[in-house]
Amino acid sequence: MITITNPVLTGFHPDPSMICVGEDYYIAVSTFEWFPGVEIYHSRNLRDWELAVRPLERISQLNMEGELSSKGVWAPCLSYHNGTFYLIYSDMKNTGVFYDVNNYLVTAKNILGPWSEPIYMNSSGFDPSLFHDDDGRKWFVNMFSDFRTWKIRFSGIVLQEYSEEKKCLIGKPMRIFDGTPARTTEGPHLYKRNGWYYLFCAEGGTGVRHQETVLRSRKIEGPYELSPFTPLVTGWPYGENPLKRAGHGSLVEGNNGEWYLAHLCGRPVEGKYCILGRETAIQKIVWENDWPRLAGGTSEPQVKVEVNYQENGERSEYFGNWRDDFSGEKWNNHFQTLRVPMREKASMTARPGWIRLYGRESLESCYQQSLLGFRQQHFCVQVDTKLEFLPESHQQMAGLTYYYNGSCFYYLYVTRDEEKGRVITVMRKLSDSFDMPIGVGRQLPEGKTVWLRMTVQYGCAQFFYSLDGRVYEKLGPELEAWRMSDEEGPGRFTGAFFCICCQDISGRRKEADFDFVEYQILDEQEN
Image (tube, rainbow, N blue to C red; front, side, top):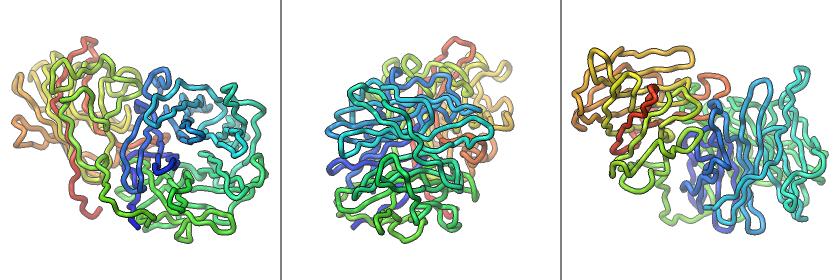
């Protein structure tokens, strides 16, 4: 037996969809506005996970240009049947009065790809999934939205058959579940065991009252009865448990005779704020009277879970320290871009051993940004980079940003002032304010290399800079890292990122060169 420690995917890995294929486990998670879309992780023991692939890597599969923050890819569903991997996903365009969303299917024979061009499914609601019945038929489920003011917005779960031959949904959609009083019914998945169809749904919203609800029926179209073990998992009643916001689960039968539930969760700092976003945890499932329930006997998510695998020395490297010296042909796989690929906005050949970013739009933009970001995966971290940048105007900026979205970020950057010349300063953009806490900043020698650093320790963050890479000085005030969280504002579903970036809002596309990026875990003291 080995012990896994939850969460197994730390830092912004929500809405897990887990499958087991032979000796291999895979988990697909949401990526929202970050490109490429969907992350699929791989493990053989449920403890040690590595990023396998981001399958939506082409604009023809996913074009999010112009989409607002926390839109884009919602709640993918990964499945496998007869030698083919199936990936269902939502591309959320709008969440105002209406939900404007398109649901798609892509397939691949190999998890690493190539993944197909998308097949359009429907637009009646988000969080779709695909179920492969043992009679060969395939069924598509999604939450059903209703904008009418006298109706419930999350109006239940609908079922419709999918024809692989015609590559479209056929027949009429059937509503199979209206939801419980917990409301906000979403994230449906169908499973079958011992002649029972099981409908798993997320309910209670994405905050502290999140939960997983389970129902069953002898017929796929219902009627479905509610499990006596409801909710299956939730963090709400367990005040001392560090795993909050538990819900949105995915069931899998392991290759070791055990059953498991992958579910999202959040670990707050400052008592409330999940700066790492919603993460993925795994619980063991047992069956009682043909009902699934957590192995612990309650709905409480466990931090430590024993799983039936032998220790083999395998350990994950993806969730540890890492460094990219930009000496290869591709940047480190921790990096993602916003909404669309970088393409001509970045070059690793213009200056070998460096990455060159060509300035584009501001950090507020939902269109063309010259930015490479990576998740904060630990509460206490240090991020370093080395920059060469010769701005000609205050409209040209390059540096290191601590970023939640275009309305919430801290930015340590080099720019030019009309009187002081080349300077380094700090920008602070929050949902309710914008300021530059040290004004014009500090003057820099012309042409000199600058080392940039940021440390985050739970709810606090601090910028530093150096002119020699050895002696660092603080720059600006201590910053509130807890502001980079879902809880800081409505409709926020991602997590904190660090990014190297370059802006030129004059349109001249001034370049900035970065020599390396390094991510180091600091000792986590008691929060």
